[in-house]
Length: 496
Image (cartoon, rainbow, N blue to C red):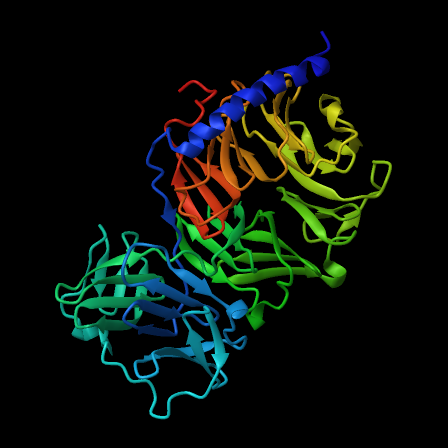
């Protein structure tokens, strides 16, 4: 039987099964604690203020707002809401005018409108801010300050995590002589003044949206915010935040995470070429004449001896620290290289005319991916262990193929969906997808499928997902979160 003629029928049957499962997932009949953990902000705060209902923490480029009552997540505001582009210097709350006042690093004063969620320039109160509600505290005067989280300690003006990392308390405030709020250079804490017992407040990322995730060679996880921020997470704890709006990061124009650098950090595509970021900032600049040839960089793979870069028009490569070279493309027409990945058979690249494989020194058509030759393959994922399956997306459906000699099946399809943003295999042989704004786990060997939209620690669509053992890292509307893979996910394809 012709396998390609048989596949659509099986796909249709599977599509009916998957469609039947969707209402069950949406209705919550599958119940399991997802244990979402939102990621906190990192960096040095420049101010702390509070009203009867809100607490604000100011950072050099952003403003964080907590609600004093309830457990809802905080909100982040930036230049898009009228905050000064030159940076924030301080904040204070004035009870007579019932307003939060913001001072910029250049001395401008802005009044925050809670109703409109925006700031506008105005003259500050003549006598300065006056508040009976909030009282600034000197940290040494808080004699009984005690972190409630297991393993945390107080050492002078620092809070110390179980690994020994110290976070300096920059601001402390009491509200109504009852609540205690602390702003540190590693997050925000709150608790009771009378006991001094404080807990960390999950604070999301430095902006309320993230759309790309990438690991680096050290094991850190990087999230890219929708407006250009980059946050490095170590053990799911933020350790560095880099803002494209910071004048020191002028190269980060229209940035996009591409993948891990072999030394440390990540490669980021920018308008003028490539930059390498680490927790210390911009490490390397490959821009101008040093940039890869062929236009904007779309994809990147940093191997032991070569940096491969897929661009809008070609494939460029650099051996060691030498200049980039561009071989004449083996495909018929100059065009974009959407993705690059390593396989047991060589470097595999995805183009508008299917795949090409670098075998030795030559580029060849992989016959085991022949069905992709006439298609524009915009995304693909490679399994990192047997049977080394390749999942690819052509804008209509996901296809699973297997490298010859490694077993597996080539006749599994996921019914066409209009919006697939990312996909990757986990160690159990399942495919995790960001599909139609949901987190989807699909077992291509059995056809079983689960989908999650709510209860993920985000406020809306999921834009990217990366599985990590028993948990998954999600990015989307609301920032980023770590979520447990539920027990009712499609079963593993591997023996335990």
